[in-house]
Length: 107
View: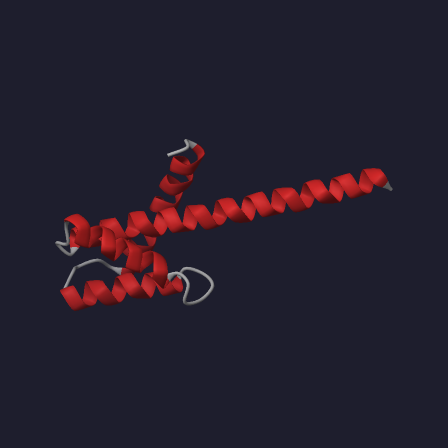
């Protein structure tokens, strides 16, 4: 049974590693998304970084990406930024790929 215990420990370790990677990737994606959105809204410098932090915090409202999407959509609507829902969601997907690449590269 010692072999089964080792296998179980390995699966648990991999699950924990994958969950940690997913969390880091989502946080990185949200930062990149916040900087992208800030740029479109004309927010620059430290204010852009602060806005990106707001986007990261928005992700803690509920499970999934809808809280982040609603934050961006609402802010774009308030600032009259022309981006469709599809464009925002596509950018979220593209930036997730970029975030994973950055993390895997050790950036």
